[in-house]
Length: 106
Image (tube, rainbow, N blue to C red; front, side, top):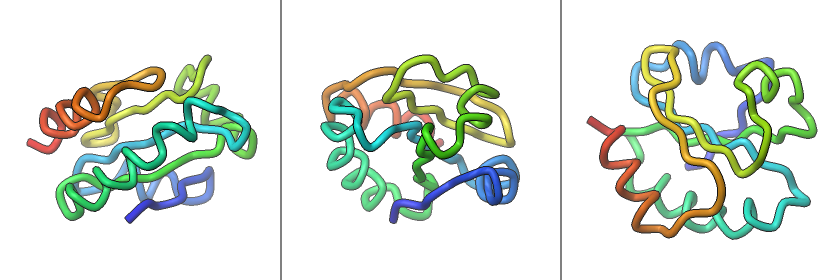
């Protein structure tokens, strides 16, 4: 399941989560973001219950994007215990993304 994060729920859903959280910073107009979307959807299903997966639209949540230094998209961050522990920038192959999920699901 893909969650929609924004400034109203970010603290509760991401920073205070009991499990690792994957956050995809994206925009509707971003071609590489659209390419990554089906990969992220599949990984969200596969890792359901082990990693919470959600998206943040940078156009609608520019303050959050700025807070985390998002300069280019797609920019994907893994959070654990309220801290950024890993990141992926740009469109990457599914195998590379799956490896990141494996590393961060532990």
